[in-house]
Amino acid sequence: MDRLEFIRNLKQPSEEKIVLLVLDGLGGVQKNRKTELEAAETPNMDRLVKVSEAGLMTPIMPGITPGSGPGHLALFGYDPLEYIIGRGILSALGIRFPIRDGDLAARVNFATIDENNKITDRRAGRIPDEINTKMCEKIREIIIPGIQFFIQTEKDHRAALILRGKKFSENISETDPQKTGVPPLPVHALDNSSETAVTAELINQFLEKVKDKLSNESPANMILLRGFALFPKIPSFEELYGLNACAIAGYPMYRGLASLVGMKVIDVESGVEPQFDRLRELWGKYDFYFVHIKYTDSFGEDGNFEKKVSVIEEVDRNIEKILELNPDVFALTADHSTPVIYKAHSWHSVPVLLKSKWSRHSYVKQFGEKDLQTGSLGIINTLDLMTLIMAHSGRLAKYGA
Image (cartoon, rainbow, N blue to C red; front, side):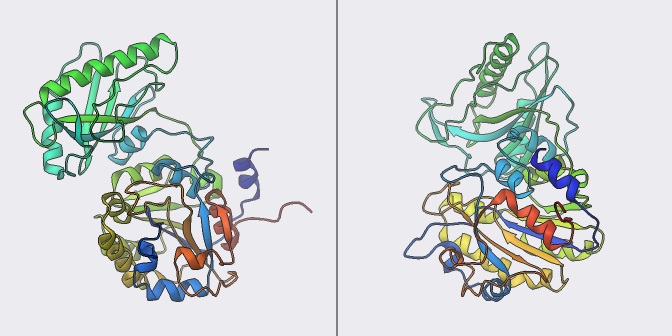
């Protein structure tokens, strides 16, 4: 019996309400002897952790740096080594594109290249949505016989690209080299099938036309493509856990992740206060509330220590809005670490606390990476968080006689 089938067979009904609060990229590495979380003033989290089970979580396995997709799938209890889902599908679902079987999706970064075709900024200065929309409109003027393509704004410098009209393959390489000072990469076939070769050729042809179309634009004068993916099949949250779940996420990609596993996606402005206020408005309508805060990750990638600290402190100031609802189970954690001094996702373990009436108290002094090493949970795998949440909410029956 596989893991998900095992959980499905043990699930049982319960009326208890669950909140999973995810601060994207929360984990850090010490700068001047403190991480971003340890440097932040978090009196509410510090009080909460003392009456919660707490510790650290390994998102995938030690030493493996997770993308946002695998990190969140693990949080939701789906093994990211089994469910390999390209970021393109998540971007398409996040903007509510009517994706079809056979469509090929990719995540787009608008980028800046110089006169030598070398990337100077992989995010084009994080252009605002208005410029992104204008660039998408220009790209839609491109015609490639035999296929349809759709490009739509996601947020800031990101967009979603969807190709339709042929039998496509997702076994192709990405064009983002993940660094500056080098040209965008050409797309290569990763297997020997004719469909893969045709897919790679079509996308390279498309990219040449994009480069020409955006050549006079600034700062967004090129696109980088990542996460090519066809639409996958995955069991829903309701099938697996028996949970009526919703997602309160302002950033499209995380709405896509939630949609993929069958959560109801709630329209909300991105930001701590509006998202917490929306949770309060919806309280009682769902069993499981996934609340995603993006900007801890964004400021980590930007290398902005003070801004990342400020977002953590804003969450702490407003966390009483959640606790006043008295959720039966409350979990606070992250999908991965994004240390400011690293300016990227990293393999480091992430902070976690889990509070319910059944919690073993941790008695740590501070909700921070150093203290959490001595918490009652120890260091666990992220994949195990959902089974703990299910157990704490009375939703898992005993295994065996």
